[in-house]
Image (cartoon, rainbow, N blue to C red; front, side, top):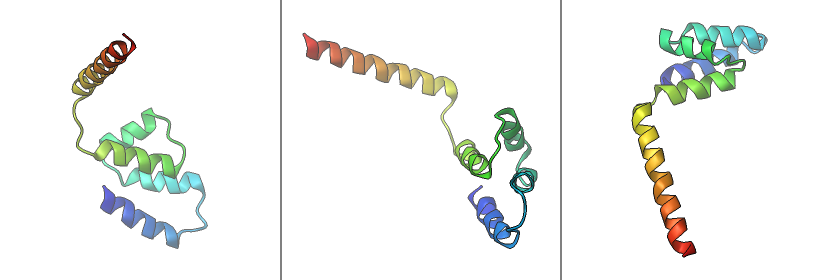
Length: 87
C-alpha cells in the first residue's frame, strides 16, 4: 500500500489544480475493492483521512476478537494492580 500512496503523491504534484473531491475520487479508484468499501462505509471525506485509514487497514492485524481479549486482560491486570496498591 505504501508504494501506491507514494506513487499517488507523485501524481498529485502534477495535478495541483484538482478539487479535493476529484483527488479523493482518483485515490479511491486505485484501491483494492475491500479498501474502497471501507472508505465508503466510514464516510471518509478527505485524502488525509483516506490515506491514514488504508494504511491502518492494510497492516497485518490480530483479529478483533484477540484484540478484545488482550484489551480486557490488560484492563483486569491494571485494575488488580491499582486495587492492590490502594490496600
